[in-house]
Image (cartoon, rainbow, N blue to C red; front, side, top):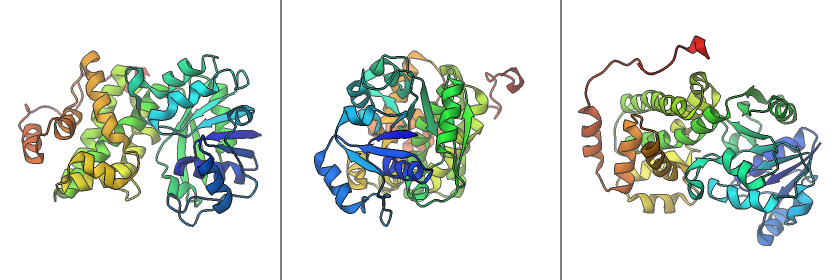
Length: 340
């Protein structure tokens, strides 16, 4: 099978390597000739994935039309570049070919819509969209460390095609029809990872981090169900699975940024020091804007917005969270899971 990966960041490189090892013909696309030349010379990116080399069979190109001639297109660019990348592919991809979305986040310029919606609108050809998401750091996938993810799509055939193409002895792919829940889990867990990093950076303990993670998944699920996702999705790989790995791992850019903020750095300076896209920072803003249209209680996300964008200090944010009205842990507005 011919697969093209659009985007040469760490995740794009890791997935290109995985697909090549699976026996597919793989082409990596970048819009930058300098990046293509560097990858051709080094067969990898020592800054993003030190010690990981691309197989010599992986092609490299800046020719968008040539890359689009594939059985499956994989979008592996940061969230802010999804619309531009997809718009450039409009009319180039063969009709009906699955488009695999690896990017996680919201489309700010599209009214903070989900990135699968951005792809559908930008491509405009009815190509089935499959979100491939879950606990999957590029650094570990690239080295063949056992990993499991979920391929979520409204099109069962497309999800199963992605499952077959990506699955390997160390990379297990499940399928799901709930692309809304899967994408929201992948986007909102970055908010909670930032919060967990801030907690650690401020010197709080494991109790606090566990609190943020467990109440964070409840918040993600509450919001996700209101957005049209299914409750069970948030207890799976794209929900609690991705939340755990992003909150506890040193690979996580969101956690690293949070550590710096918790230690006293301004958010803008922390993001600059991390030196890569910190999706959680932008997800906090997106959730804040979406909450205006979909009223739902999101105390951790609201606290993060005040901390990152309104200048509140950590202690005042903690005080506001702990002074909320006491309540039951059970969610009164959640449906019985047996109904799904």
